[in-house]
Image (tube, rainbow, N blue to C red; front, side, top):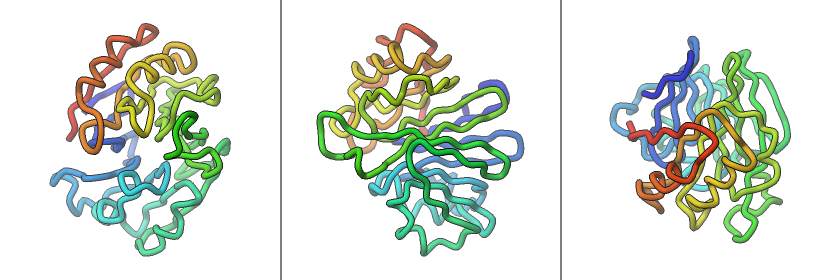
Length: 217
């Protein structure tokens, strides 16, 4: 687990994370969770960036949700979430915000600019979570886009694999020129496309902040 102030952060693999803050457990895009997450049913909040199978995985969600879990997702995910026994599933558009269990959640557009996997019109999203004085930005499946500017992020979770999202070079440019967080953590590699070399390359190219390459847990 990576610790920053009062935030605990576990990379669960691919674009998935488990965040602990105060008494809350928050998951983002759980996919191919390890055995230690099997039937834990401990999620207070789940955030889902879009409806692709490696971000919206019903099998993985069933291992972590319970009757009090609130899921917040891109609107396109709602029909698939109906089968889950949770307190509520809420659809949200880009450039929006809401409070969930007293936690402020904002959405940022996430889309491709030179490929067709994540069209802007689909309204796929990235999330910013306010955790005390810190802001954690999960970029989602996105290229470098102008909406990243002024996100005022403390921690940025950044896709680096290329093919469907930014390459390591593009991701480092987004961090250096637009996002400028205190810590940048590479993701979206090691499962479907990309590998640790992409994360290392990204880390070498980032100049404005510290980077952390996490091991999946």
